[in-house]
Length: 266
Image (cartoon, rainbow, N blue to C red; front, side, top):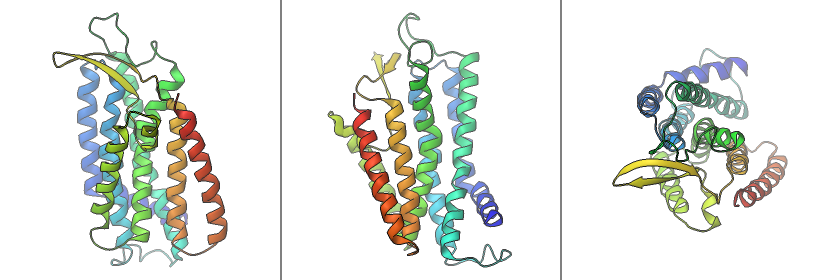
């Protein structure tokens, strides 16, 4: 299993689309940090898209490639369950990249702190908001989004390995998230990705930001982690091994996800 997971992780890390996503993330997040962005949490959309959405495509292609390419011929044959687990472990690669970017953004914020216009106005950052909420928003917006998107790619590829399933699932994911995020009631919390801050824009210029009062970042982070677990279980259910136990765990995790989503709405 360790050798298989390392091989899949290398395949993920070397994939051109993943490398492109990392490069774009670094460029965009550096520009946000150097500019002293008065709404720093909104920049989490960058790793969420270029590592989460691109990670979905990469994970999907790596999973379906097992059906058509002997990439892992040098490794002793293993059953499909272990291959699925290995691919899920490989999804830690984009998560690790997002963790590194989050750490870099924290360092950059020390060097170029976010500044409101005027400087006395609030900023959704440390010092203005509870540190645990800011950290929860950063973790969900970067590492968890990258992990969840990639895990979903594995699950979709296991259940729908046909050509075009990645594009179809991406359209549903992106459009569904955008529609849910636009709802004004607590139902918006079901969106797997959230921008946790509201911002003030005057004459097209972003001036200040603050944490949205209706949503708890820490509880929504718990909700997003539950969704990641459900994606892993969905991928494993396709193998048909231990299905009863997996369904029982899935039911418990679904209840936990629903509870976290309800608690996230303040």
